[in-house]
Amino acid sequence: MAVRYKSLGAFKAKAGDHLAKGPVALVLVEDKVEVASTVRHHMDLGFQTILCFGSPEIDWPAQMPASVVRVDHPVWTQEAMVETLNTCIDAAAEGVWLYYCYNAEYLFFPFCEHRTIGELTGFLAEERRASCLSYVVDLYAGDLGRHKSAVSLEDAHLDKSGYYALARADAQGKHLDRQMNFYGGLRWRFEEHIPQRSRRIDRVGLFRVKPGLRMNSDHTLNDAEYNTYACPWHNSATVAICSFRTAKALKRNPGSTYDIGTFWWHKSTRFDWHSQQLLDLGLMEPGQWF
Image (tube, rainbow, N blue to C red; front, side, top):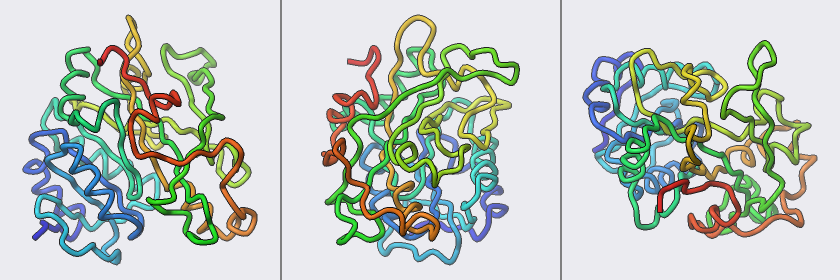
């Protein structure tokens, strides 16, 4: 039976027990959509510990593995995301790798079909990297007539082009070294329905804990080097988080659902659920990992 904490406060008292050894996956559960498949996917990648944070009103899937920890804590807002992740950062042992995503999001990294998340973080550590930039790749059902929530694992599609990056600047307008803002997918095609602060698709989704580290509300960390897409001397490995989250929100929101009859366009392609497709499309890269 899965361990359950009735509040974030109750979890804090025991958090160190679950965050002593990584990599650890933190799943922010916003609703009941594809919770079980999200957990199962990340278990298959080799995460030994999975912590799920979500409202107590959300139905918990039956037969959830005992290794999964549930924490009753709503995560609907950016502030709740920041509070949850910083709580885990504070409780984790120094050097532990943390990864976070939402339900109906699925991590892919180069060669993940036959390599584990532990092998990836081991390689990153050898490269003297303490983080791995993640690109959130929007998934959506190809037929909204059959899948009105826009979520379907069997009918999942993604955009095969339309992605771009702009240089990231600081408050004084100076370009930041090896940092860029990335855009594309549904947040670009339907940007009139997306708040400007939410249009980026980059996220520091995998990182190594150190003292003083903090997560920001824009999915960056307070150490500039953690937010870079590559090390100074060569390209670094990146990962993709394939996500139904934007499609789900666009079809759930009354302000956008009636304006969107389909997410399909001439640059849509069926998602193969394989890392090679993402590599071929340039949506992640292996860097020096062969």
